[in-house]
Amino acid sequence: MTDAMIARRYAAALFALGKEQGEEALGRYNADLQALSGEMREVPALAAVLQSPVIATTEKKAVLNGVLKKMKADQTVRNFCLLLADKERLACLGDIVRCYGTLLDEARGILRGRLTTAVELTEERQAALKAELEQKAGTAIELGFEVDPEILGGIVLKVGDKVLDASLRAQLAILRETFKRGE
Image (cartoon, rainbow, N blue to C red):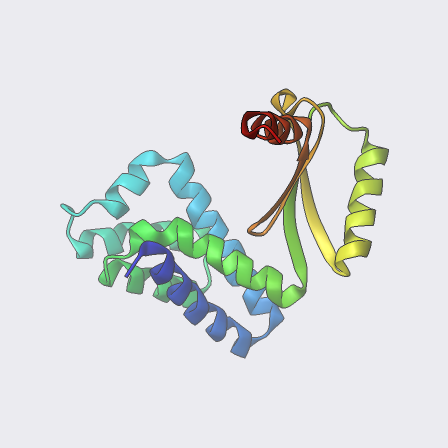
């Protein structure tokens, strides 16, 4: 079984528990998982300890329990993370957090995306593009903006697993291939 499949299953299980508790619990679980994941990114030594195959599970659980208590994490999230330690799945925590976030966004009817342009857009232009995309999608969109001068012009929009590449770089690549084929 791949790590992605494992992450989806664990995230779905925690999400189902949260759904039984209500919307507030879903958000609380997400916040706790995000905080733990962030702590592991900020403190590489913590991530190394929790993901090391050499360190005993009891030691990992003691460290994890201490971190979660310090964060004042929900008891369900604590139990969930301790289960991950028992099953030696703490290395999948980042993927589990992403999958849980995706499930939460789907339940709330939110799409997440990233819009890349060659030049910086004004805040007014960003708001207008976001509003237009939300209208076309028929749902709320959390849209991040980034600048990549290498696309030369146009936009690259990524929403979920879909990509719309309307960049000048992509159009030139298509034109180049057309010339190569002699069409």
